[in-house]
Image (tube, rainbow, N blue to C red; front, side, top):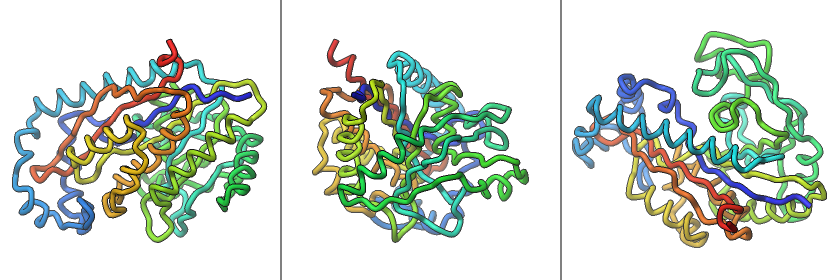
Length: 335
């Protein structure tokens, strides 16, 4: 039988691929964003600045940015090393599409049942190698999972072939002749798996766009069904469940992040589900799939290993991203 032995929750921010001296450039986008989600409501940047003042100005120096970028790089390296030590045969990769492949639709939850996944330029170097690569998915397992979820009341979208990544041409002026995978997945392949992923199943959640966003509770329930289905899969394989995204962004909320990480470490599903959905919006919505990893690993007795938590700011009002690097290693706990 298949055995779940490892779980990861890792951010996939473009800031992780930027030089520290370039971090503040993203602040201009935040200043022009009329809907910055922060603590259950949207704010304009002037409103946010009035609310929070210039409290984060001390963290914008090049020295601070360099130190935080160095910590993030070290944490990513440790996450990749932990993944390598786990010797994974099969992976489930949880992420989302951010209008990269679906500009005109937002399916709630999708399982990819095709055979191949493509990565490469024009994805930025933090997300992909400098050449086209093709990775093998796992159609048999994907179809099996869809059937297992149907039995438990989940009606899922079946993605049989990757659509064109229209975001690439729009934002990079290049239209590749292959369907570049959304960045949530390419980051995992490139940064965690060293461009050598095992057979795997990409699962896409619409975390960003109302009204078809799954709730935190739905993502928790999804993890329960995923766990049971994998454990019943008759192949003798070692499985990892990986969540790509989070923590708080694009307004960084360190208090919220630390509360969420405490709940994650305690397997506190009720606490996570009790947080109003208005906190799980914009990029912070990606936290929802962390709960799926939790539920998939809890039965193993694995405890969360927090490699590092690095708040990274790019404006004085505290916009930026909370970078949390954590994993669950069932065999480490057993040892």
